[in-house]
Length: 145
View 1 (cartoon, rainbow, N blue to C red):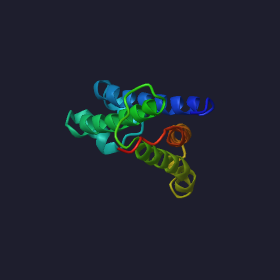
View 2 (cartoon, rainbow, N blue to C red):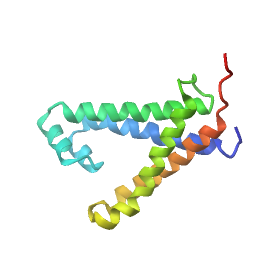
View 3 (spheres, one colour):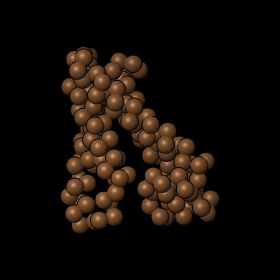
View 4 (cartoon, rainbow, N blue to C red):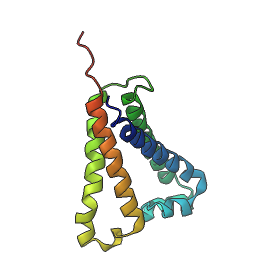
C-alpha cells in the first residue's frame, strides 16, 4: 500500500463508522434525529409512533455501514481480512461514487434535494468511494490454495 492511499482509506473507514454510529444513536434520540438526518416521512412517523420500522431500518443501515468500515480497516491491515475483501471494497466504492455523482443530475429535476445535508452527504460519500477504490488497489489478492 502506498502511503498516499492510506489516509484516503482511513477517511473511508471513519466516514462509514460515523455513519453507523449516527444510525445507532438515532434510535434513542428519536423522531427529531431521524428527521434531521433526512429519513423519509414514513420512518419519522414510525419513530414517533414507536413502531418497529424506524429502529430496524436504522440498525440495518448501521450494520451495512459498519461492514464498510470493517472492510476499509481490513484494507489497512488493522483487522482480520473479511471474505471477498477486494470485491466488497469495489462494490462499496461503486455505490459510494454513484451516490455522490447522482446528486447533480437528480437535483435538476428534484429541487427538494438541493440542500446542505444532501450536498455534504454526497461529498462525504464521494470521498469514501475514493478511499474504498484505493483500498481495492492496496489489497493484495490472497494466495491460491
